[in-house]
Image (cartoon, rainbow, N blue to C red; front, side, top):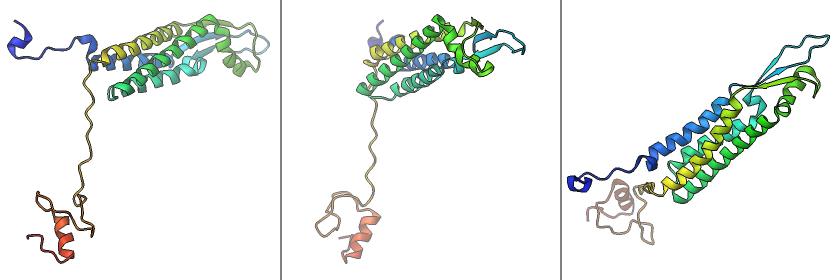
Length: 211
């Protein structure tokens, strides 16, 4: 029996439900942000006369832009849930661009980890370059995957958002005593009841509001 015959409205497919899309679009950049709190690089410094301990470089230090892009992605995903049709396109594009930035930065680190570790090595030894041995962890790869998924979420919002109902706009209710007035400043005649403020205005002008 069809849903129309039973009187129940047809439920939207899961792939285009706002709650599902927005939740996934928020969780992915949060996952990218979480990777930056972990160690991305292990650096074994060359040992000389002074013994220098090995370094553990977190993603937030090795790739600061990934943290920023992830926060932009979270904000864009949340904004898409309350944005209008045009603004939703903007937030979806921002989400996709933030994902592109994360994927690009993470891929660059995977291709050249020495460049990413140079700042940490210079801070620890006072010298740049050298023969430091660098070992990558899995987190740069996970961040790159999250960046790609953020781009897909941006496209998902664009596709599913066409079926979302328009956001309701709530206008401010008119304040009492701010209705139309005559040339002398007194309230204009209205068919509705006179409120307390209008009554005081009329009394102050010598007019009985009960007339």
